[in-house]
Amino acid sequence: MPLLEVIQTRQLSASIRLTDTTATLVDQYASFIHASADDVVEQALAYVFSKDRDFQEFLKTPHAQKVTPTLRIRRTTTAPYAVEQANKKPAAGVESSDSVQVLKA
Image (cartoon, rainbow, N blue to C red; front, side, top):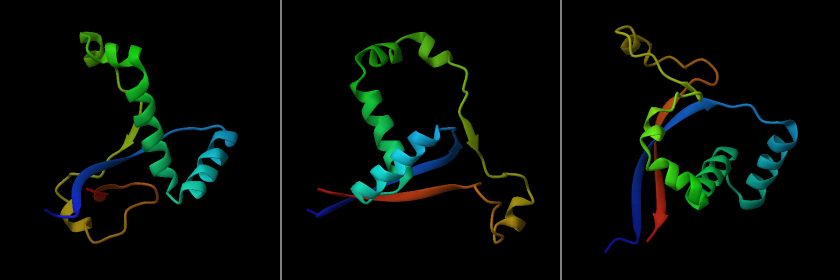
């Protein structure tokens, strides 16, 4: 049995606004746990979503499937010329990448 389990995940880049106090706390927490700010936000949201019983019940309703998206997700170009642009560095802050997480078994 392998000692490591490799899980491939698809990550998106999104733009959110935080107060300067919250942004500072995210950076401080990231430093505290030796992780990136992205990891802190990802894990904090996953934790809140999983612990909120009312939200879990909401997810089971038809209304949850009809929510209008408001998160500003940055997408890469899929136009035919995108292949030509593949070797060029994307504009700052625009990315969509596949990532690999390694978890201890």
